[in-house]
Length: 248
Image (cartoon, rainbow, N blue to C red; front, side):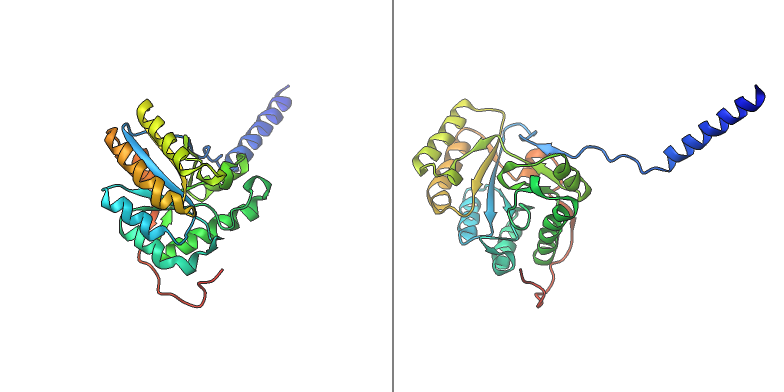
């Protein structure tokens, strides 16, 4: 009986040792659907960098508003070819975030492929601005547990939206304005708005109206990081001088 008890105790200790030697389970990644700071609106712009980034930044600046740019690496052109525009937005206090490298359907990718989609944009951002993003948006708003795990592993919050201007699905500028007017009238505590940097009517027609209407409704127009009360970047350093490696 004593021998059997000793064997049982030894097995229990061995099992405990194995468990304690295992890596700690990572806490679930953050998935954001709405802002948390009351009376804020985060205007976000996907799919860039593109030709309208300077004008979007200037429109926001003129109104004392801030925006967030979820950038691809190689979607509407190579991110390095628009480095000056990205730096312009960053230097003006707008947030630079990741939309992953190629605008792929992330649900179809494996662990290694996902990391590649993430790190290429991180590298480009650090080269161009010196800052490593702490927020990302999955293309098409598609994600699964693996996407969230990779984002968490890379220190980025998955960021969706609770308001869609409709610009990416062919909604007319008038209809987009109506959507903004409706949300201003309904006046939820916060708004996390999806727009696309690549749509001319968004940059030149809808955005000025949206800013005016939302500010008229009493909202503060801030970055996603500000509307969440969190840092925009994992680290901030100095931008790098351009080299021959800056290519897609």
